[in-house]
Length: 52
Image (cartoon, rainbow, N blue to C red; front, side, top):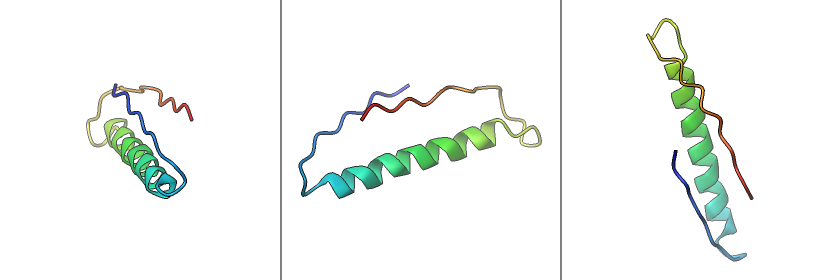
């Protein structure tokens, strides 16, 4: 698990949003590959928690 902390003002919030979206998308893609029975993935079903 990684703890990611962002601090931003109005000017940079759009970049922070892209970063959070990218992390969530990459994490979901990685979990899909791990849980694929054909790909021989493991049973790692770690929950994703976001605090905004």
